[in-house]
Length: 143
Image (cartoon, rainbow, N blue to C red; front, side):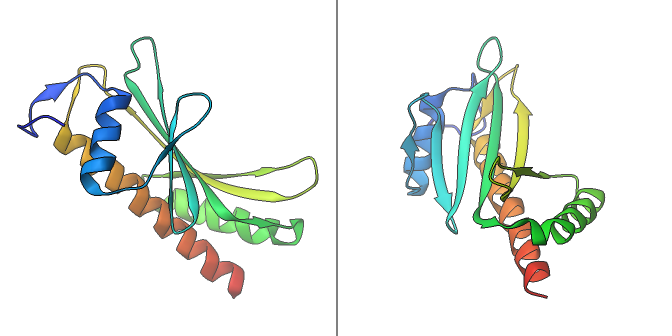
């Protein structure tokens, strides 16, 4: 990471890895070269995209896999959360086996570069707001 946390540099996987290491986060690199990690047993992926790898796409999958009996609760909680909060975007997927997985996502465009301070803030925002949604979903599922 840069010595001056407010200087702007191009986004890179190496900068993300340096941030994870500086914060003491455990992470892995998957077979596509994307970074991943676990917070509260939820799986996060940090994917760089765009012509110059300037887009940071943070995707999280809930640790829980649900049956279809929870579909209405999941839909209602997602609708409520997305209406009240700017981010993260929350959504679900239904597998071929009829199981639900619930996800959050945030995408940031760093075309003109990003400072270490901004990267730290975006990472904390993505993890914190995703965890908040999953906690609210857990409460709704248990109600």
